[in-house]
Amino acid sequence: MRIGHGYDVHRLAPDRRLVLCGVEIPSSLGLEGHSDADVAVHALMDALLGAAGLGDIGRHFPDTDDRYRGISSLALLDRVMALLDARGLRLGNCDITIVAQAPKLSPYMDAMRDTLAARLHCDPGRVNVKATTEEHLGQVSTQGIAAHAVALLEETGPRIKNL
Ligand code: MG
Image (cartoon, rainbow, N blue to C red; front, top):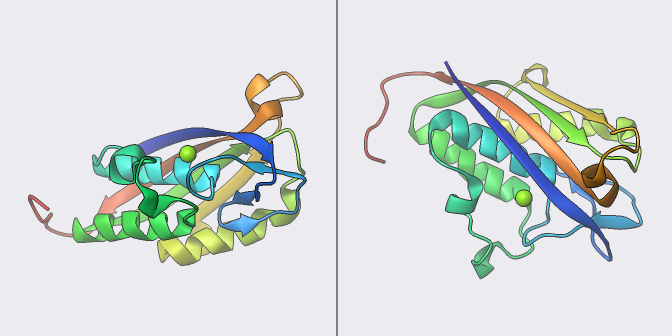
């Protein structure tokens, strides 16, 4: 088994969509970023890449590359899963914590989990999504949204070398 951790922050801004775990959430503020700025999927991808020993999303999908401008982070997640699949790695489970003062995210938790499970090709029971505020104590969660993720990967067979 292999474990990985990911962390990301994006700043809140007007005139941007708020997309978390692939689910669009009604909000007067969205997240700034080169892609759709889905901070939760970014943290998850970093956890998956970390567990696989493959660096981070900045290395695979640089924000200087116009091909990734405005792209759905779920499309990037598909590419990460293809990298893992090629190495004989599959998801054991993952756990994501979104840190946001607002908006209230609990109505969207099940949709977030199910959306991710579909893209991760796994049972929803292997995916956990939760959210917390920082009780108005955190600068990050009042000006932006942060996300932490951990992922466990299982080696399913002989690893393909030098991919
Ligand atoms: Mg990011």
